[in-house]
Amino acid sequence: QVQLVESGGGLVQAGGSLRLSCTASGRTFSGYTMGWFRQAPGKEREFVARITWNFGTTAYADSVKGRFTVSRDNAKNTVYLQMNSLKPEDTAVYYCAASIYNYDYWGQGTQVTVSA
Image 1 (tube, rainbow, N blue to C red):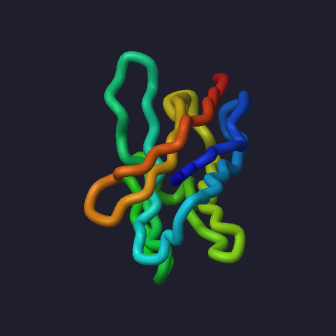
Image 2 (image 1 turned 90 degrees about the horizontal axis):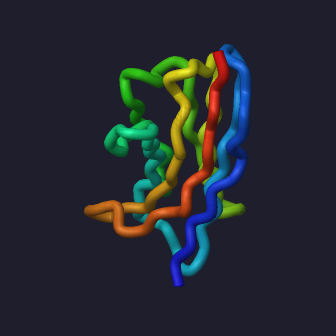
Image 3 (image 1 turned 180 degrees about the vertical axis):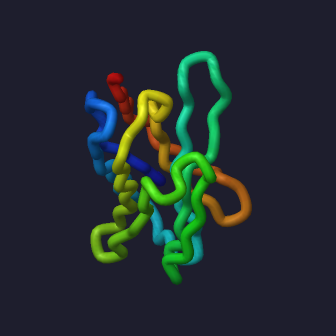
């Protein structure tokens, strides 16, 4: 049974930092792309960042480029999202997901709240 478990969310002041973790289990994720998404209240879920499990190739939404960094530790089966210079508009539930062709596996989400 595939499981993605996020952790590391919390309350932080604007300008602060948080690091989210997503630990994957239940199968080998070789060949997968791991994505981070977020959903703010009243808004649709949006893409934040992604990384390929094998080669570590990354991509970012324009809104987080230069502030967020996605990385992975293959030995720990864990993907990270380092978030710096946080803004109130980054407030959302953050989800990690795994994809071969589609994002078929999702975590339960972790709340990030950035106060002004």
